[in-house]
Image (cartoon, rainbow, N blue to C red):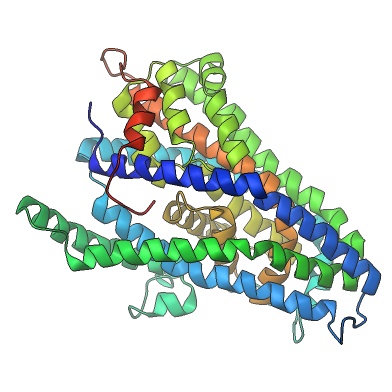
Length: 465
């Protein structure tokens, strides 16, 4: 079976992605840089506190510089999601029956993930342990005031209507992520129709299609540059926080870490194996045992997209057909992001609880919707969870001052959570492939992972990941 143009493009770019990531990781992984930044930032805060040094520089000034990086991530996220959705709609080609089945499976999986997250956050309420501590962070930003309660309307319909854009540019200026996605879906559907018509007539890609690809690749490249500056942002903000509040501010991070890992663990190690066993007829020994290589690879390199060749190899060992494997791991990678969406929603609710927000269930569902949409929009992008988090926090009603102060603190443990998210995303890819294959009568897939990797190495058209 021959790979489609879209699948070949994805696998071809994986080779370049893994090569670049490998050389970068050999020099200094991002999480190592962040840990070093935390250590030196903490030392600077302990030694100098709020006193000036080096010609009048203060830790508070370093913190302001660090928050610029957080603001850049938030600014970049909206156009990045917009063009990612446009590109996916234009270039992904799926038969209606396969596409519908893939979408339903992914929606069920992410709905279960969100249910797990909501149950944990509403029964345990771990964010309450942070109450009072976040207020201390607010005082680090000049002019900060205690945020008001999140305003909600009377009915869910009114809440949903508030996200419908009034003008084309309004969602971009207000960081309305749901409005941006709705706009991208409408424009993307139109461009897809034009693109398919030109393909049937044997014409070259439309200029607008090439423009979307060019802008998307450019935004991903800029994102890579900003990510290189993240350790400096963490260094500055940690120095500011420790200089103001002391090292005790980190003593509360373990609760956030445990809450996030609890949600990811329940979803990955209970829900996935049970569904693979009872619906997909793959026992936990087969699903987890044969898929261990892909799971560990994703956790080590912190990328589910770069793990696709290993994922295909593991699915082949499970006797999952090549068609279902490639459909789930290559095309479905834009949807199978349970790890990111679960983390974003739980983190937003955690901080909302820490600030004393009394969020009704309708507001929590809007946060969940923003997490799902954002997670799908940045599929395959490096450090996707960190890129999306500011937008989801904004959807939760958190003020920018809280977002800017809290995110660098969260980054100190995010490198642990990020690896768990990547492992969950790969397990989601494998489960979707198993479910797509369930009930089908076909011969065991012949192609092996060696063939997939050989195909990935073939020169292919440059397309955005």
